[in-house]
View 1 (tube, rainbow, N blue to C red):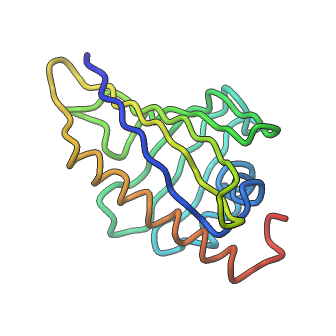
View 2: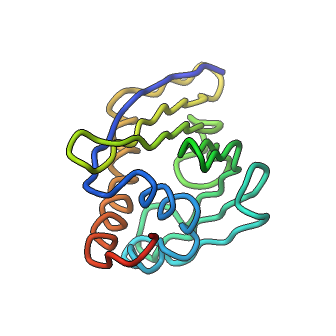
Length: 159
């Protein structure tokens, strides 16, 4: 098994606290509302904190039926969240799991920046290219952008 790491940042006009609440604390309720084109439902086993299992069921017609991840860390005070994708989605012949470490910080324009570290754990001697990583990020961007647009259109949500 090899590990490929990738750092990236995403800026948003939404405050860090509000974005953390939407993408982490209330994702099970918000994702299907904000991104019905992509997310059919979100199932939560546990209280949402470390050790919880989250299953995201995708809308019909998308390349994957679901993903399942385990929550490894959640710090509401420091707006950080870590989890590992352990089943479904892009996992299979090339990837054993994908781990994510996310931190939401204040942006220069009054919004926020989500700083992410992704670790791709490959199966055996398989490789995972930067183009494949960018493809994974593009898939996540669709939901992220939909949640962001939903929050802009609904200023009372996740306050």
